[in-house]
Figure 1 (spheres, rainbow, N blue to C red):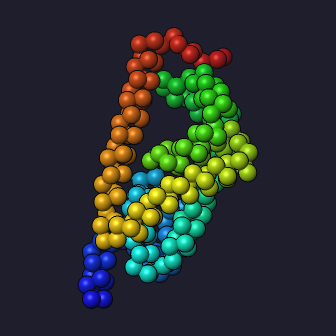
Figure 2: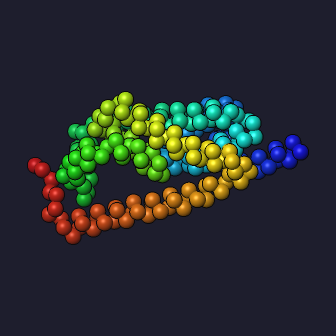
Figure 3: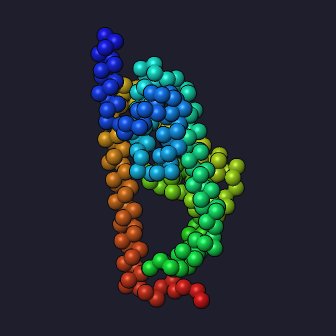
Length: 218
């Protein structure tokens, strides 16, 4: 019976990146936390694979479920703070300077983004933690705008805790069928990406057909 469980676990885990398996096998729950921290820094690394896999490992007794939840949330916060630091180091002046060199992007766009973030920043950080791709990138404008660190940490921790718990528990409850989670999230991610692409296309279209709008300041 044990050999069946082990072979089933090995087959399920084979779909995850090898280095993720290695981290979890060698370090346990802290390994899952490290993997999630890296996922925040490098969005193409899929949290929808790491989190359910960690939950599945917990269901097999390989690691504590509570430890998995704590360490993955900690990893999310560490990764988010690193990107917040990048945004803070970049700062508004450098952001504007970069914008001034990019085609189709105007200083007025930066100013509008600043105004929007000043009004909706807390909600953007909280809900952004539950949107693929943007869940990592939202930390950068928070750093650029120098959002209060305690506020940023609180919102990031809460949003990450909700997102991580859903996927860890899904993997824990589904057991050997944990990969079903990735199928649903893959569809969700594609929808989000499609809307993002449409937004970029619309933005470019406005700039091309209305070149006078939002002219740069001298």
